Length: 481
Image 1: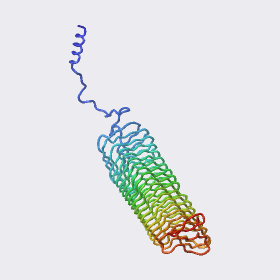
Image 2: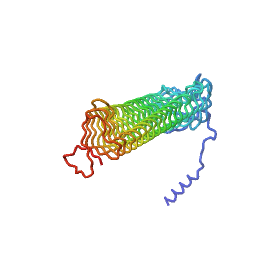
Image 3: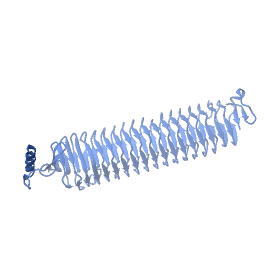
Image 4: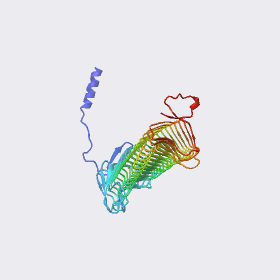
């Protein structure tokens, strides 16, 4: 019985009439409830403007836009003059005039702007050069700077984060920032007189795209990191980075100057540089690994002294395929169909386990006090391997070159060692220009001539392999077969 009464009582409560407030709420500021509290609408009552702004935010808080904003001459669209401000444009557009100032201007600490578009302002799209640790998310900027002639799409101060943004057609840089900025998943296109991305030192730029910018696609200062970026059809360099920077997994195609242009002590890995007007990769003393440089106007990979180039491929470049400065290492690389020499090693360099094939000049060329070993040079239009004074050519395969297989080019006392090579179908197997060289244990066949040069060289006995039993008595011999 008690259970029945309880159920009836509950039923009577359910049938009680619902009470509601008035359908027309009282007048006053409108706010939304955000994750961390109420949000404030940007309007004339809550954020009145002043002499240089349509709306001005002067207190910390979370603000939102409830409709499109039309800019006015001599004014910013929204000016932020407080720390700890978040502005959500809610997908609306700020549309300005050439006589307007910037779409959004901010000076403070920890300012966030997100979710909207900015178009046509006379100065900048987002101007936060004096802000610290700002966040810009999902903002699209187009055609700003018409009044100043040099406006930037998004301009931030130190330690800012920019993500998911795009800038098209600014008069100046698309994106520009101070030290320590993080930029991810952004697009820069068609800057009329600036870079796509231009940042100071210690920038981190990830998964971004720069296309048809009037200057460089990407430019960042010392100690910066680029990963997964693409630079295409920019007027100057595709990606330019300061000393001690890292570039990984990037592509640079069809830029007017260098594909990748790097200063000293950089690391470059798993990148492609194709169809650029100057060099594919141009770097100071750096490590370059697993990169491809093809169809560039000048050198495929052009590395300064003390560089390491490993596992790279250079194809059909307008000058040398791979060129390094002094005291460098080139290892496990291939260089094919380049207009000049396939691989050049500077003074005191080492080339090992490389292939140079079908290049317009020679295959592999080494400067003084260098070594080339365990490499293949074939079908080049002049020499296969060329060495200078105090150098070594060891255990290489050289065939079908239009000039000498191995050429020692310096005069005087040159002290080179040429040993253990296999040379076939070249004009001359080994050609010596200098004296006091050692030529031993080489094998050759099908060459127009064999070993030629001055008499003051040490040349192992030349014997025919047919019918000869090789043993310790002829272990230094050069063998004709």
